[in-house]
Amino acid sequence: MSTKPEIRVFTNLEEISRAAAHLFVEQAARSITERGRFLVALNGGGTPNRLFRLLATDFQANVDWGNVHVFWGDERCVPPQDPGSSYGQAREALLRHVPIPEENVQRVRGELSPSEASRDYALRLKNYADPSSHGTRFDLVYLGMGEDGHTASLFPGSPVDVSDPTMPVTAQYQDRPANRVTLTPVVFNSARVVAFMATGEKKAQTLAEVLSGRYNPELYPAQRIEPTEGRLIWLVDEDAASRLPRTLLSKFCEG
Ligand code: 6PG
Figure 1 (cartoon, helix red, strand yellow):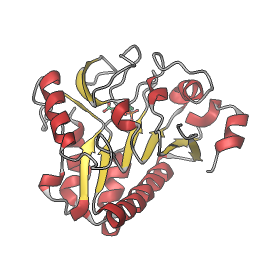
Figure 2 (cartoon, helix red, strand yellow):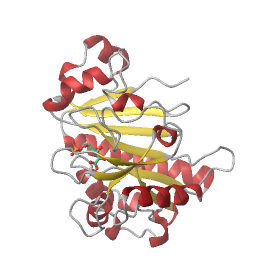
Figure 3 (tube, protein in one colour):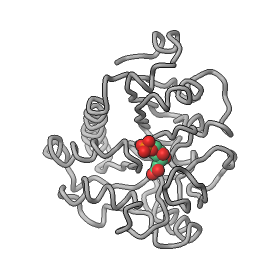
Figure 4 (cartoon, helix red, strand yellow):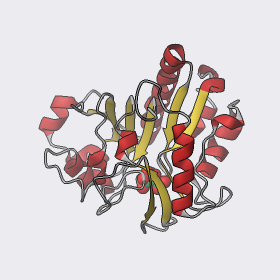
């Protein structure tokens, strides 16, 4: 039985990023206390940049980086130095500024072909499998949403009934590299906390569809994210929330 989303509306990206950084600090502390490690999956795209910088600066001292293990929800198949690499993006804004051991950074090998990179990533994930469950349970997953309703690299029309934890993908979106690897809902939906961040009027209509009661995951892949035993949190700005029905807001809104 999946949980209802918590929708938090903020005035701007700065506030969203601060809320997301607080979530990181809290989840890291709780996970390390309870299980000795914190498994987090990052996203790419423009939205998480401010979060990464906040974690590297204002919030850095509040995290026990030695026990943080970083993964990605998806990656573009480009070498790590390429401007399109989500790993490269996080390394520049966050990872090279914090004392995280190099062996705790589990990047997707974007320099390989999508299918090779997907297989390699699946094996790496397996090393982190939770002894009490079948797969790897992330303590926190950050996701973004495209104007077309995609999330990570789960694009409209991509297969819905997937049983593998990772998947190679080819999909053209804006000017971003098309060859990609993504985690699948098998992994996302076993996470303890999934936090979406979305901003801007251009995403408002899609967000309203995604959060409506009309289930159409072929068209709106973000609807495939439904943690079975975890929290689903949407951190959005007022523009992105502008088309959400009042009923939905009064029912779930916390912000
Ligand atoms: C990637 C992502 C992708 C992203 C959305 C939103 O491209 O790396 O994982 O799913 O989160 O496209 O991107 P923006 O934050 O740039 O709007």
